[in-house]
Amino acid sequence: MTNTAETPANEDDDDWEREPDPSDSLRTFGAMVQALREHAGLSRAEFAEIVRFSKHTVESVERGRRMPDEAYVERGEGATGNTGALREGAKHLTRRDPGLAAWFRQWARLERTAPSLCTYECRLIPGMLQSEGYMRALCENDMPPLTDDALEARVQRRLERQRLLTDRPNTTFDFIIEESVLIRRLGGLEVTRDLFDHILRLSKLRNVTIQIMPANSEHHACLAGPIRLAETPGGKRLAYCEGQESGRLISELKQVAILYQRYARLRSQALSPLESVGLLERIRGAL
Image 1 (tube, helix red, strand yellow):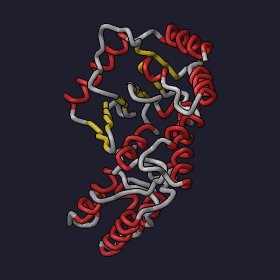
Image 2 (cartoon, one colour; image 1 turned 135 degrees about the vertical axis):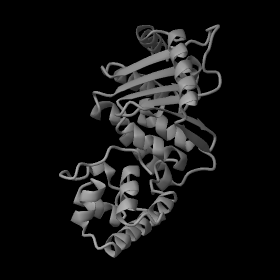
Image 3 (tube, one colour; image 1 turned 60 degrees about the horizontal axis):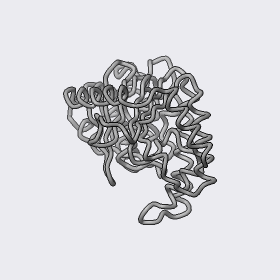
């Protein structure tokens, strides 16, 4: 279930909020909403006024084309008699997206509206900064091996996600990358050269900051692993941590505060953005 801002009753849904390939759970949930609405004797327009979403949004949810917002579910419960059916049904909603791991989908959705995103990565180049050749090399090394269709879907989804860097110029994207990640020649020299050229081009965007954590540093605040941080339009801070075949969205205030503290300290330990670009240029020149 998403936490995106509601659509005002006089506005249509944004296109990106529509599910490109509705899941069975979305269709079932939508049918249940429609049945409860009609049982309550409400038209779509009347229901839309109560839940404070547009009539178009109500129709999209009922047809399984949109994941409902938490506010939509709560207000829908009140409008249909507080049976608890909508709250319970919403817990089991899933979406289809062949290009994203199941555990990453909720975070990817948050990325679309966050005014601030921070990433620390110690395993590989962050997805937002990957060149297409590097993406393909990663997918080709996946185990068990991907089918051609699955590999292509994953690459295309990553390319689509990467467009956020240019489509959202008012969002700040901050990255800290371990120097050791830059040494790995995944995909070969040509792929690596193209990767460095790609990162250097992205580093010139005004909303993108890239820092390198030097391998010879005597201090390191994030030895526990990679971190992603986001701030919502409403100012709420969230974090995401990922491991093998798993990921966890963190909203508990104390845990999020600790991860923000670690990231802030790591930022002070890493090379400055100017020094980091210089290091990237030197490594690229030696390839």
